[in-house]
Length: 342
Ligand SMILES: *Cc1c(COP(=O)(O)O)cnc(C)c1O
Image (cartoon, rainbow, N blue to C red):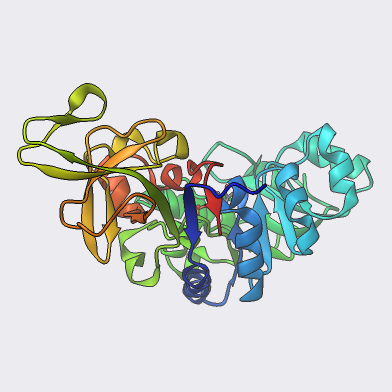
């Protein structure tokens, strides 16, 4: 017995493809890959990877080997950003993905296991993952068969001097290793211009409709559309309140729809009083606190909406982030298992 979910995440595949094509264009001569870690930023890694492979995306990045294993049947080229623990060796040796080696220990582990084609992460100042630029200069990677030498920008969404420092440090390694390609830019890094593109870019956020830099706005479309079913429609008389802690009071008689959606689904409590549903272009504001599994919206303007109808939430990531203080990344990756995706 299949029980239909009362909430669904509609993934606009056309917008997803169009965003990748736009980022591919913006990447100029560089190839454009895709970060599909964290279940494709919450949208469904398999759906995302299948869709992007169709339009020509050839390089996919996941965080760990379990994520790579899920995508292995697609036969796409996968890189595992978090490298190679001892317990990852059997998976790595199975050959469905390349490790992105990021410590001298991982490099030794890979060599000792017989090696093969790998990627390597070099740290150019973020101090997160990666071997040092100096270690690479000193020959740490000599003899390795490297497909892509990778580094990652800490502040590409800002115009700060650190971007150029990281770029220059990375560029200084050109020709120092056997790497076939070099890759630096995430979504925001693509917007920093051709000097940052090297051979391959690795957008994540922008693929899914996030806006990494204001200057990229014209190129990207919304991909993720949370939808929820109306469980109840009620009239709230003037002077009464809605929801926990009675934070919203009706100043006039108000028609309210209770939706099957809450913060346990990733519709964040910070959207209380600032979020909205949209129906035919009309905004239906969220009233009062978002509950764990429910929220209320004002449907006074829409007498036609009844129990069982579906509403689409306004989920423009940049706007929702600005209104709630929650990052665009969290708004996407928090979207929970209870959504039917497709
Ligand atoms: C997540 C990630 C990306 C994608 O970053 P976005 O900001 O989402 O475009 C690229 N490279 C690395 C190493 C990452 O961890």
